[in-house]
Length: 338
Image 1 (cartoon, helix red, strand yellow):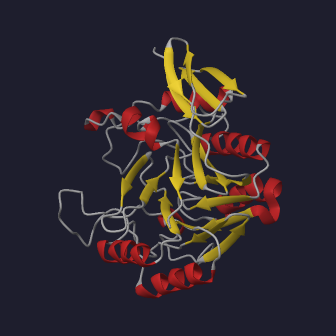
Image 2 (tube, rainbow, N blue to C red):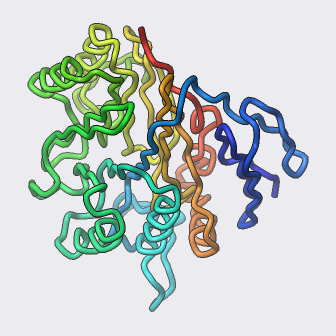
Protein backbone atom coordinates (compact mmCIF):
# COMPACT_ATOMS: atom_id res chain seq x y z
CA UNK A 1 0.00 0.00 0.00
CA UNK A 2 1.15 3.52 -0.75
CA UNK A 3 0.71 6.60 1.39
CA UNK A 4 -2.12 8.83 0.19
CA UNK A 5 -2.42 12.46 1.22
CA UNK A 6 -6.10 12.70 2.07
CA UNK A 7 -6.34 16.20 3.56
CA UNK A 8 -4.47 19.48 3.34
CA UNK A 9 -5.40 22.77 4.96
CA UNK A 10 -3.42 25.90 5.73
CA UNK A 11 -2.09 24.31 8.93
CA UNK A 12 -2.69 20.57 8.48
CA UNK A 13 -1.71 17.55 6.39
CA UNK A 14 -3.25 14.10 6.91
CA UNK A 15 -2.08 10.92 5.18
CA UNK A 16 -3.52 7.41 5.15
CA UNK A 17 -1.93 4.08 4.32
CA UNK A 18 -4.69 1.54 4.71
CA UNK A 19 -5.88 2.00 8.29
CA UNK A 20 -2.71 3.79 9.40
CA UNK A 21 -3.04 7.56 9.86
CA UNK A 22 -0.33 10.22 9.91
CA UNK A 23 -1.24 13.77 10.97
CA UNK A 24 0.98 16.84 10.78
CA UNK A 25 -0.55 19.80 12.63
CA UNK A 26 0.45 23.37 13.40
CA UNK A 27 2.02 23.79 9.97
CA UNK A 28 2.78 26.95 8.03
CA UNK A 29 0.48 27.88 5.14
CA UNK A 30 1.58 27.45 1.51
CA UNK A 31 4.59 25.37 2.54
CA UNK A 32 5.88 22.04 1.23
CA UNK A 33 6.22 19.08 3.59
CA UNK A 34 7.08 15.40 3.20
CA UNK A 35 4.97 12.67 4.80
CA UNK A 36 6.34 9.12 4.55
CA UNK A 37 8.18 10.08 1.38
CA UNK A 38 5.14 11.75 -0.18
CA UNK A 39 5.35 15.48 -0.83
CA UNK A 40 2.40 17.76 -0.07
CA UNK A 41 1.89 21.50 0.19
CA UNK A 42 -0.38 23.19 2.69
CA UNK A 43 -3.02 25.54 1.33
CA UNK A 44 -2.41 29.26 1.14
CA UNK A 45 -4.42 31.07 3.79
CA UNK A 46 -7.09 33.44 2.44
CA UNK A 47 -6.66 37.10 3.40
CA UNK A 48 -7.94 38.46 6.67
CA UNK A 49 -9.17 36.89 9.88
CA UNK A 50 -10.75 33.49 10.34
CA UNK A 51 -14.41 34.31 11.02
CA UNK A 52 -16.22 30.97 11.25
CA UNK A 53 -16.03 27.22 10.71
CA UNK A 54 -18.85 25.22 9.15
CA UNK A 55 -19.09 21.42 8.86
CA UNK A 56 -21.12 19.48 6.29
CA UNK A 57 -22.04 15.88 5.59
CA UNK A 58 -24.19 14.16 2.98
CA UNK A 59 -25.29 10.67 1.98
CA UNK A 60 -25.52 9.28 5.50
CA UNK A 61 -27.96 6.45 4.62
CA UNK A 62 -29.19 5.52 8.09
CA UNK A 63 -31.01 2.20 7.77
CA UNK A 64 -28.84 0.84 4.97
CA UNK A 65 -27.74 -2.78 5.40
CA UNK A 66 -25.66 -3.36 2.25
CA UNK A 67 -23.11 -1.13 0.52
CA UNK A 68 -22.62 -1.49 -3.21
CA UNK A 69 -26.07 -2.78 -4.13
CA UNK A 70 -27.76 -0.58 -6.72
CA UNK A 71 -30.63 -2.97 -7.39
CA UNK A 72 -31.45 -6.68 -7.22
CA UNK A 73 -29.17 -7.31 -10.21
CA UNK A 74 -26.04 -5.76 -8.66
CA UNK A 75 -23.00 -7.96 -9.02
CA UNK A 76 -20.97 -6.04 -6.49
CA UNK A 77 -19.01 -6.86 -4.58
CA UNK A 78 -21.65 -5.99 -1.99
CA UNK A 79 -20.38 -5.36 1.54
CA UNK A 80 -22.32 -6.18 4.71
CA UNK A 81 -21.42 -6.11 8.37
CA UNK A 82 -21.37 -9.47 10.17
CA UNK A 83 -24.55 -10.65 11.87
CA UNK A 84 -24.97 -8.97 15.23
CA UNK A 85 -22.48 -6.18 14.47
CA UNK A 86 -23.43 -2.51 14.69
CA UNK A 87 -24.83 -1.19 11.37
CA UNK A 88 -22.16 0.66 9.44
CA UNK A 89 -24.20 3.89 9.02
CA UNK A 90 -24.23 4.16 12.82
CA UNK A 91 -20.45 3.66 13.01
CA UNK A 92 -19.61 6.08 10.22
CA UNK A 93 -21.99 8.84 11.28
CA UNK A 94 -21.04 8.64 14.93
CA UNK A 95 -17.42 9.11 13.89
CA UNK A 96 -18.34 12.05 11.65
CA UNK A 97 -20.29 13.75 14.42
CA UNK A 98 -17.45 13.23 16.90
CA UNK A 99 -14.83 14.64 14.54
CA UNK A 100 -16.98 17.61 13.57
CA UNK A 101 -17.71 18.40 17.21
CA UNK A 102 -13.97 18.67 17.80
CA UNK A 103 -13.70 21.75 15.53
CA UNK A 104 -16.66 23.41 17.30
CA UNK A 105 -18.45 24.52 14.11
CA UNK A 106 -20.94 27.38 14.23
CA UNK A 107 -23.18 25.39 11.86
CA UNK A 108 -23.49 21.76 10.76
CA UNK A 109 -25.24 21.35 7.42
CA UNK A 110 -26.61 18.03 6.19
CA UNK A 111 -27.11 17.97 2.42
CA UNK A 112 -29.57 15.13 2.03
CA UNK A 113 -29.92 11.35 2.04
CA UNK A 114 -30.13 11.15 5.80
CA UNK A 115 -31.87 7.79 5.35
CA UNK A 116 -32.05 4.93 2.90
CA UNK A 117 -35.85 4.97 2.56
CA UNK A 118 -37.23 7.76 4.73
CA UNK A 119 -38.56 5.50 7.46
CA UNK A 120 -39.28 7.07 10.88
CA UNK A 121 -36.74 4.86 12.63
CA UNK A 122 -34.04 5.97 10.19
CA UNK A 123 -34.75 9.64 10.85
CA UNK A 124 -34.82 8.91 14.59
CA UNK A 125 -31.34 7.38 14.33
CA UNK A 126 -30.17 10.46 12.41
CA UNK A 127 -31.61 12.83 15.01
CA UNK A 128 -30.00 10.91 17.86
CA UNK A 129 -26.62 11.05 16.15
CA UNK A 130 -26.60 14.69 15.04
CA UNK A 131 -29.32 16.70 16.79
CA UNK A 132 -28.21 15.74 20.27
CA UNK A 133 -24.63 17.04 19.97
CA UNK A 134 -25.31 20.03 17.70
CA UNK A 135 -28.80 21.23 18.65
CA UNK A 136 -29.72 24.52 16.97
CA UNK A 137 -26.47 24.48 15.01
CA UNK A 138 -27.85 21.62 12.87
CA UNK A 139 -29.45 22.52 9.52
CA UNK A 140 -30.89 19.80 7.30
CA UNK A 141 -32.39 19.40 3.84
CA UNK A 142 -33.74 16.18 2.36
CA UNK A 143 -32.31 14.13 -0.52
CA UNK A 144 -33.90 11.70 -2.95
CA UNK A 145 -33.66 8.78 -0.50
CA UNK A 146 -35.67 10.84 2.03
CA UNK A 147 -38.50 11.60 -0.39
CA UNK A 148 -39.03 8.47 -2.47
CA UNK A 149 -42.47 8.06 -0.88
CA UNK A 150 -43.21 11.82 -1.12
CA UNK A 151 -42.39 12.45 2.52
CA UNK A 152 -42.19 16.09 3.62
CA UNK A 153 -39.70 15.83 6.48
CA UNK A 154 -36.73 18.18 6.05
CA UNK A 155 -38.37 19.79 3.00
CA UNK A 156 -37.95 23.37 1.84
CA UNK A 157 -35.23 25.97 1.34
CA UNK A 158 -33.55 27.83 4.19
CA UNK A 159 -30.94 30.50 4.91
CA UNK A 160 -28.07 30.03 7.38
CA UNK A 161 -26.19 33.16 8.43
CA UNK A 162 -22.73 32.85 9.94
CA UNK A 163 -20.06 35.49 10.40
CA UNK A 164 -18.61 36.15 6.94
CA UNK A 165 -20.88 33.86 4.90
CA UNK A 166 -24.53 33.30 4.00
CA UNK A 167 -25.47 29.72 3.13
CA UNK A 168 -28.57 29.16 0.97
CA UNK A 169 -29.66 25.57 1.57
CA UNK A 170 -31.79 24.37 -1.37
CA UNK A 171 -34.27 21.50 -1.47
CA UNK A 172 -33.42 19.97 -4.85
CA UNK A 173 -35.60 16.87 -4.61
CA UNK A 174 -38.38 15.76 -6.92
CA UNK A 175 -40.48 13.67 -4.53
CA UNK A 176 -40.69 10.09 -5.74
CA UNK A 177 -37.72 10.49 -8.10
CA UNK A 178 -33.96 9.96 -7.97
CA UNK A 179 -33.22 13.02 -10.10
CA UNK A 180 -33.36 16.63 -8.89
CA UNK A 181 -34.39 20.11 -9.94
CA UNK A 182 -34.27 23.81 -9.18
CA UNK A 183 -37.43 25.53 -10.37
CA UNK A 184 -37.69 29.21 -11.36
CA UNK A 185 -39.32 30.10 -8.03
CA UNK A 186 -36.32 28.72 -6.16
CA UNK A 187 -33.96 30.69 -8.37
CA UNK A 188 -36.00 33.82 -7.58
CA UNK A 189 -35.72 32.96 -3.88
CA UNK A 190 -31.95 32.53 -4.17
CA UNK A 191 -31.77 35.82 -6.08
CA UNK A 192 -33.54 37.54 -3.17
CA UNK A 193 -31.16 35.90 -0.67
CA UNK A 194 -28.19 37.27 -2.60
CA UNK A 195 -29.78 40.71 -2.85
CA UNK A 196 -30.42 40.85 0.89
CA UNK A 197 -27.00 39.59 1.95
CA UNK A 198 -24.11 41.93 2.70
CA UNK A 199 -21.59 39.06 2.60
CA UNK A 200 -20.64 36.22 0.23
CA UNK A 201 -23.27 33.55 -0.48
CA UNK A 202 -22.65 29.82 -0.93
CA UNK A 203 -25.50 27.67 -2.24
CA UNK A 204 -25.82 24.06 -1.08
CA UNK A 205 -28.16 21.24 -2.06
CA UNK A 206 -28.28 17.49 -2.48
CA UNK A 207 -28.12 17.02 -6.26
CA UNK A 208 -25.06 17.92 -8.31
CA UNK A 209 -25.37 20.44 -11.13
CA UNK A 210 -25.46 19.65 -14.84
CA UNK A 211 -22.84 21.76 -16.59
CA UNK A 212 -23.10 20.51 -20.18
CA UNK A 213 -19.95 18.41 -20.08
CA UNK A 214 -21.49 14.95 -19.83
CA UNK A 215 -21.09 14.19 -23.54
CA UNK A 216 -22.68 17.54 -24.37
CA UNK A 217 -26.22 16.12 -24.46
CA UNK A 218 -29.03 17.58 -22.36
CA UNK A 219 -31.30 15.02 -20.79
CA UNK A 220 -34.50 15.18 -18.76
CA UNK A 221 -33.26 12.08 -16.93
CA UNK A 222 -29.84 13.45 -15.93
CA UNK A 223 -28.91 11.89 -12.57
CA UNK A 224 -28.46 15.27 -10.85
CA UNK A 225 -30.13 18.66 -11.25
CA UNK A 226 -32.21 19.01 -14.41
CA UNK A 227 -30.27 20.98 -17.06
CA UNK A 228 -32.87 23.78 -17.13
CA UNK A 229 -32.51 24.55 -13.43
CA UNK A 230 -28.76 24.06 -13.66
CA UNK A 231 -28.59 26.73 -16.35
CA UNK A 232 -30.74 29.10 -14.30
CA UNK A 233 -28.36 28.71 -11.36
CA UNK A 234 -25.39 29.53 -13.58
CA UNK A 235 -27.16 32.54 -15.07
CA UNK A 236 -28.03 33.81 -11.61
CA UNK A 237 -24.36 33.55 -10.62
CA UNK A 238 -23.47 35.76 -13.60
CA UNK A 239 -25.76 38.49 -12.23
CA UNK A 240 -25.04 37.97 -8.55
CA UNK A 241 -21.30 38.14 -7.98
CA UNK A 242 -21.72 37.58 -4.25
CA UNK A 243 -22.67 33.96 -5.09
CA UNK A 244 -19.31 32.17 -4.91
CA UNK A 245 -20.08 28.43 -5.28
CA UNK A 246 -22.63 25.63 -5.28
CA UNK A 247 -21.84 22.44 -3.35
CA UNK A 248 -23.76 19.16 -3.36
CA UNK A 249 -23.61 15.45 -2.57
CA UNK A 250 -25.55 12.63 -4.29
CA UNK A 251 -22.73 11.27 -6.48
CA UNK A 252 -20.67 9.82 -3.60
CA UNK A 253 -17.54 11.38 -5.09
CA UNK A 254 -15.26 14.40 -4.73
CA UNK A 255 -15.22 16.55 -7.84
CA UNK A 256 -15.07 20.21 -8.84
CA UNK A 257 -16.18 21.66 -12.15
CA UNK A 258 -16.73 25.25 -13.25
CA UNK A 259 -20.12 26.59 -14.26
CA UNK A 260 -20.18 27.42 -17.96
CA UNK A 261 -21.01 31.15 -17.86
CA UNK A 262 -20.23 32.42 -14.38
CA UNK A 263 -17.09 30.23 -14.00
CA UNK A 264 -17.68 29.69 -10.31
CA UNK A 265 -17.07 26.23 -8.82
CA UNK A 266 -19.79 23.59 -8.66
CA UNK A 267 -18.61 21.09 -6.07
CA UNK A 268 -19.43 17.48 -5.13
CA UNK A 269 -18.61 15.98 -1.72
CA UNK A 270 -18.24 12.23 -1.17
CA UNK A 271 -20.45 10.15 1.06
CA UNK A 272 -20.14 9.61 4.79
CA UNK A 273 -21.39 6.01 4.78
CA UNK A 274 -18.61 4.12 2.96
CA UNK A 275 -15.32 4.77 1.13
CA UNK A 276 -13.58 7.07 1.76
CA UNK A 277 -15.93 8.11 4.59
CA UNK A 278 -15.69 11.89 4.63
CA UNK A 279 -17.07 15.14 5.96
CA UNK A 280 -16.22 18.65 4.78
CA UNK A 281 -15.13 21.72 6.71
CA UNK A 282 -15.47 25.29 5.46
CA UNK A 283 -13.15 27.83 7.03
CA UNK A 284 -14.60 31.27 6.42
CA UNK A 285 -12.03 34.04 6.20
CA UNK A 286 -12.55 37.71 5.47
CA UNK A 287 -11.03 37.22 2.03
CA UNK A 288 -12.18 33.75 0.99
CA UNK A 289 -13.53 30.34 2.00
CA UNK A 290 -11.35 27.26 2.40
CA UNK A 291 -12.83 23.80 1.75
CA UNK A 292 -11.12 21.02 3.72
CA UNK A 293 -12.36 17.45 3.22
CA UNK A 294 -11.57 15.13 6.13
CA UNK A 295 -11.42 11.36 5.87
CA UNK A 296 -12.78 9.90 9.09
CA UNK A 297 -9.99 8.22 11.01
CA UNK A 298 -11.35 6.20 13.92
CA UNK A 299 -10.22 2.55 13.72
CA UNK A 300 -13.77 1.25 13.23
CA UNK A 301 -14.57 3.82 10.52
CA UNK A 302 -11.35 3.04 8.65
CA UNK A 303 -11.92 -0.72 8.90
CA UNK A 304 -15.32 -0.32 7.23
CA UNK A 305 -14.36 2.27 4.63
CA UNK A 306 -11.29 0.27 3.56
CA UNK A 307 -13.52 -2.77 2.99
CA UNK A 308 -15.57 -0.67 0.56
CA UNK A 309 -12.74 0.28 -1.81
CA UNK A 310 -13.81 -2.33 -4.37
CA UNK A 311 -17.54 -1.65 -4.49
CA UNK A 312 -18.92 -1.95 -8.06
CA UNK A 313 -15.69 -3.59 -9.30
CA UNK A 314 -17.70 -6.25 -11.17
CA UNK A 315 -19.20 -3.42 -13.21
CA UNK A 316 -15.76 -2.16 -14.16
CA UNK A 317 -15.75 0.75 -11.70
CA UNK A 318 -12.60 1.78 -9.86
CA UNK A 319 -14.62 3.02 -6.92
CA UNK A 320 -11.64 4.06 -4.78
CA UNK A 321 -10.36 6.44 -7.46
CA UNK A 322 -13.85 7.64 -8.38
CA UNK A 323 -14.95 8.33 -4.82
CA UNK A 324 -11.78 9.87 -3.43
CA UNK A 325 -11.03 12.11 -6.40
CA UNK A 326 -7.85 14.19 -6.68
CA UNK A 327 -6.58 16.12 -3.68
CA UNK A 328 -6.98 19.50 -5.38
CA UNK A 329 -10.69 18.77 -5.85
CA UNK A 330 -11.12 18.00 -2.14
CA UNK A 331 -9.09 20.73 -0.49
CA UNK A 332 -8.89 24.21 -2.01
CA UNK A 333 -9.80 27.86 -1.58
CA UNK A 334 -12.95 29.44 -2.98
CA UNK A 335 -12.21 33.01 -3.96
CA UNK A 336 -14.54 35.93 -3.39
CA UNK A 337 -15.82 37.79 -6.46
CA UNK A 338 -15.76 41.51 -7.09
